[in-house]
Amino acid sequence: MDRPHVVVIVADQLRADLLGPHTPRLNALLAESATFGRAYCASPLCVPARGALFTGRYPNHTGCLINPWREPDRHHGYVRAWDAQPVLPAGRDLG
Image (cartoon, helix red, strand yellow):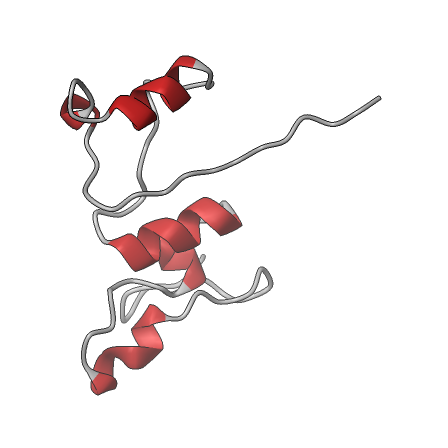
């Protein structure tokens, strides 16, 4: 049996109410697609949200909490591996 092709499209700042007469190609794609009307985004920031989408884990578990625009913030922009420990606020533990 052939597997179906799956394409995931991630766009920054594309709200559902922006689709309409000015987006004919997206409308045609939408007509042939499965949609998720009650989807949840784990973060309002693009780097942590994409990390959550592709790992299936919340940003506080991947360690990617912000978009690292400045060099001192760079370590907060990495998405860590599956076996990484969650990042917890200071003074908190898993117990």
